[in-house]
Image (cartoon, rainbow, N blue to C red; front, side):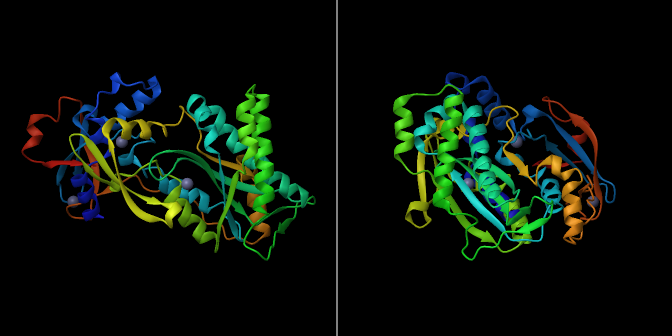
Length: 372
Ligand SMILES: [Zn+2]
Ligand SMILES: [Zn+2]
Ligand SMILES: [Zn+2]
């Protein structure tokens, strides 16, 4: 862990690139510019900081504050653990399927102009499709859907990861396992047609009727991809842990930030996940990065059907009891951070400071500034 974070600092970060360009001179929306600025200030004196003391050995340390923006590569994970443990409590004893609904690139222009509409429609069309297939078999399904907007090289490639329990509730309110001999929940070919029809129908009701676009959208097959299903609930949690709180690029993929360019690693999935590197100018790198800044308050992880919030208020718990799932009590994690010096004591914040830096008297007793 330690060596990895060191490597991160050596190679550069998204924030390093951001600090090299004049954000206000670019064509960003107010929200994009605000987000990018927050990321560039993250863990610098601009956000102020705090002084922590260990309640065991008395060691003091100074840290700059982080921006806590959900798009920030340095701020991932502070809510992740709690989120994962809550999902753990929702699990059902069945196999889980993993479907990916992808938008064709012809929609990229609309996704840039009106991301809320396009991404909301993607969620709705994917769920409407699955729900329809479930209903045909007389069961109410459920899903957790996670929006990713990026391809490996930061291009715009909106797709939805859907985690679907292999079963649902029948008309009598009883659990019904959906058993299939192949690895898919439903035929992906059939699903992709329904998905396309539902998505385009929603666009039409929103007044998007551009003939040319519609022709293009119908002239190609949309991609619904079935990934290898999860072996069991444990793997679902592992997956969610790795992917749900992901962002367009993590700092460890950045290999070098020079005065002119950024070099970063990516995988070419069209060539069997071959490892490659790409070099972009600072401006182009940040332009691509900004494509993945979601609209304010846009919810990127959603729950449907028997995993929706209305179900979780009792019905899901009853179902788990019926299926004899042992529910582990949800224990909120303690907010204490451990002392890095003695590894025993808890850190207590004893002072906070603003942009002007820590009070002078503290400087000689504390350790050098650490980013935390
Ligand atoms: Zn941050
Ligand atoms: Zn993805
Ligand atoms: Zn200590």
